[in-house]
Amino acid sequence: KNNGLSLSGGQQQRLCIARAIATEPRVILMDEPCSALDPIATRQVEELMIELKERFTVAIVTHNMQQAQRVADQTAFFGVDISKGGRTGYLVEMGPTAELFDNPQEKLTQEYLSGEFS
Image 1 (cartoon, rainbow, N blue to C red):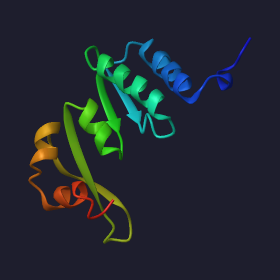
Image 2 (image 1 turned 30 degrees about the horizontal axis):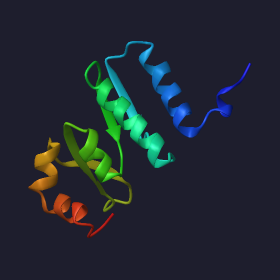
Image 3 (image 1 turned 60 degrees about the horizontal axis):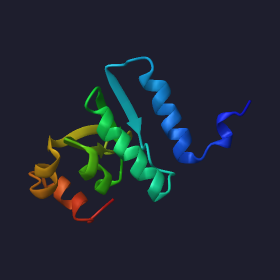
Image 4 (image 1 turned 60 degrees about the vertical axis):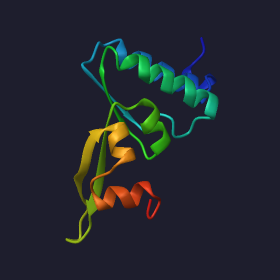
């Protein structure tokens, strides 16, 4: 009997996804699903995400802008307000992925996508 630790990072991630979809959820939330994976495993997980979005609502949290462009239909960009001593997140801009990346409407989104801050 082998445990999951004998699997590669990509295999572990796909196993986690398989376990999640076995319950037939309406929504799958993936938080940085490829953050520690090599390029080959990343491609496999991204291909799986593209397949999954045909059957499920898939929400992906990522700092990888190229990945968002490859797999997302809609993209939301969030900012953080630290002016009151805490950290409060807020929605800056949301829209179809191609439109948001090609023609962002908000200055903060433009600055982030151009690499002025990260």
